[in-house]
Length: 101
Image 1 (cartoon, one colour):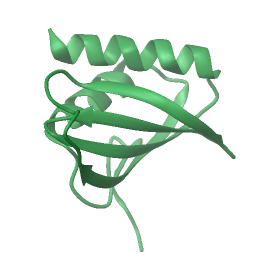
Image 2 (cartoon, rainbow, N blue to C red):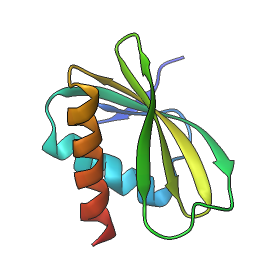
Image 3 (cartoon, rainbow, N blue to C red):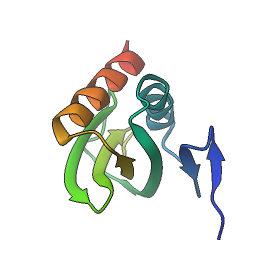
Image 4 (cartoon, rainbow, N blue to C red):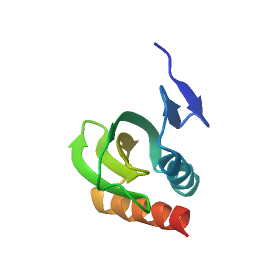
């Protein structure tokens, strides 16, 4: 199955939580070291109220898996990158802060 994409870096197979979509657009706009982002599963959670927040959970073969929280839902993000975990965490924090302004 071929994935739809935005600017060839944000792969869209299904829906993306609204606040997370904006944050990913900012992230990709500011960071050339990110090859692609594939949003994954969405689940409802009680602790995802308010501002968008993202945390890196585990390293993968070509990057990292992260969890984004926003609008009462959590969404998995698979990020393919050459950046270190610390660089990516800082970039995610900065992108989330820009969306939350």
